[in-house]
Length: 423
Ligand SMILES: Cc1cc2nc3c(=O)[nH]c(=O)nc-3n(C[C@H](O)[C@H](O)[C@H](O)COP(=O)(O)OP(=O)(O)OC[C@H]3O[C@@H](n4cnc5c(N)ncnc54)[C@H](O)[C@@H]3O)c2cc1C
Image 1 (cartoon, rainbow, N blue to C red):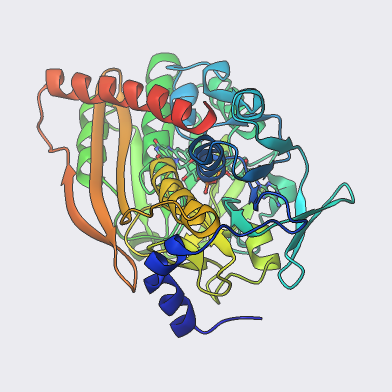
Image 2: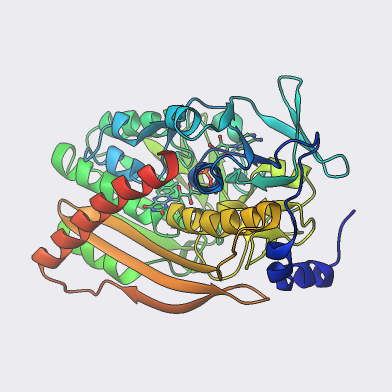
C-alpha cells in the first residue's frame, strides 16, 4: 500500500492534472467524502474551508471526541489571569449548523487504508475518499523518567488545554509562600516553541503579585530556546531574581521526576518543589501512527504543496503531527496548512482551481501586562519541505508603546483566527 517518496512527489507535481480531472464520485456514488480526524486548529479549519468553499459538493465529516475545544493558544494568559477559561473555549455548533459538517463526537481508533475507512471507538466506521489527520501531539513514553500520563494530576503537563490548565493554575495560585515552581521543559521539536517560556512569564506575573519570594526553576534539555533574548530581558526587568533557566550543559540531563514526593532529580541533586510542570518529549498524535503515516522519529512526513502524507496520497496530515520543514508547531501554522490542504483536496475531488501553496505564521507571547513580543515568517512549498522565505522578530529594548501594540495585535489575531477555525 505504501507508495515511494518519488511517486508521491510525482503525484504532487501533477497537481495541475488533478485539477483538470473529473469529479470523483464518493464510495456509494454520492458526493466525494472527506473525513477529518481532530477538531483542533488544523482539523476545524480544513473542515470549515472544505464545506464552505465546495458549496455542498463535498460530504465532510469531522471526528472529534470533545464537545468543547480549549485552545492551547492563550491558555498561558489564563494561567496569568489575563483571560478566563470560557474565553478560550470553542464548540462545534456552527460547523454543524452553518456549514453542514457532520460532526461526530468519537475517537478514531484505526484507519484501513485499503478499504479507505476510519474505525471509531463507538464501533462505527466512516468511509472516505480523502482523509485528513490533524490529531495534534502525544507524549513520548519514558522521556521523563518516573513520569507517565498517570501522574498528570500531580505533575500536570498542561500541554493539552482544559482541565490540565485549570489544575496547573490552581496549583500556582495556592503555592505556599516562598515555594518553588519547577518546569521540566521539552526537547525539540515540540508544540509551540515559545510556549513554555511564555508560561514561565505568566506564572512569574502571578507569583510577583501573590507570592514574591517564590522561585521558578526551568530544567531544560536544550541549550537555547525561542525568543530567548526577549524572554530573559523581560524576566530580569519584570521579575528580578525569580526565574532561573538551567540548561543540560550546566545541570546534566533530568534524571527523574518523583510525582509522589514532588521532587525532581537533576545532576544527582534532589529538588523539592511545590509545583512541577512536566512537559515531556512529543510525537504525532497516536492515530497518525496507527494509520501508518509516521516516520521513525514519530512525526508524519508530508508533501508541502498539498499536505499529503508521503506514505499515502489519499491521506493529508496537518499541524503539529507533521514533519514538514521550517514551520514551527503552532496553531497559526496548522490553520495555514489547513487552507493549503483544503484547496488541494477540493481540486482533486471537484476539479476546482488549485492555487500555489503559501504559508505564514506569527507567534505572539505575553511577558507581563501590556508587554507583548512576536516572531513570525512566510513560507512556500518546495519539493523537499515547507521552506522559510522571510521572517521578523521583536527586538530587545523596545519601548512600552510598541510592546502594548504588539499585545493588542495578538488579541485581534486570537479573535480572527478562532472565527476562521470554528465559524
Ligand atoms: C501553552 C501553549 C501555548 C500555545 N500558544 C500558541 C500561540 O500563541 N499561537 C499559536 O499559533 N499556537 C500556540 N500553541 C500551539 C497550538 O496550540 C498547536 O500548535 C495547535 O493546537 C496545533 O493544532 P493541531 O490541529 O495540530 O492540534 P490540536 O489543536 O491539538 O487538535 C488536535 C485535535 O485532535 C483531537 N484528536 C486527537 N486524537 C484523535 C483521535 N484519535 N480521534 C479523534 N480526534 C482526535 C484532539 O481531541 C484535538 O481536539 C500553544 C500551545 C501550548 C501548549
